[in-house]
Length: 263
Image (cartoon, rainbow, N blue to C red; front, side, top):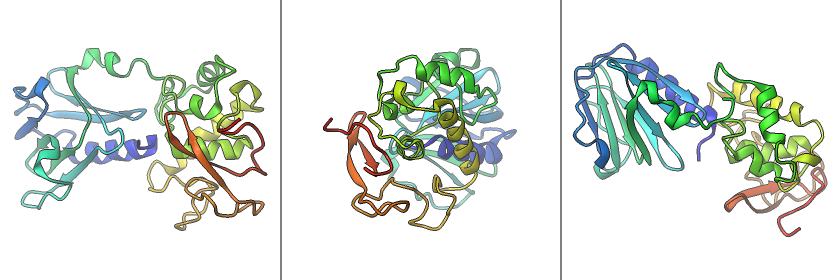
């Protein structure tokens, strides 16, 4: 599942290409909205909300999409060959006179009234990259279940919106605890959530989810994706397991003392 900064960049690209433009063609290839006719409406904006994308249209409609694991939006100019995948994977086409946005493998495609956007995103916690970011509220929600494993709590979009597995694992390393450490045992939890906000802000306009400050390939993460390699801080071999619905976990036994997947 993409991180919040990936979704932020997708929204920025869609907004730059389509906002203010008139839809010359629109095709929602999902059963619930297959007959919807959006042609002739202006696109007002595209904004991210956590890992959700909200494309607002003239007339009080919003197209809500979510990338989850495999979805992606591609932008093409007139006459350019579409390269995002086979035609049967296309879920949405939004075309203007100058650009065409094609949504591939989108697991969520929902057309709703703009006034009803809360139905899609109202459950989310404070958005790490949104104007409503509220550290105190994110802390309150995350700390509400002190027995919950930290990795799981960070991934819960109802606590704070925008963290995916890469950031969850890296934040556990930066906190000096394993992903299975109960939230109530994490010292300086507020500081950790503030760090999450800083990391996503730093990365929202660049790829790579850099957490080390080093943008060179292979040096961007402290532990994520580095299983069986030496920790860059202490040289201990990084261990791997799974956590929270079988997501991959990585941690350094020396730098991150605490409970593990096997207890």
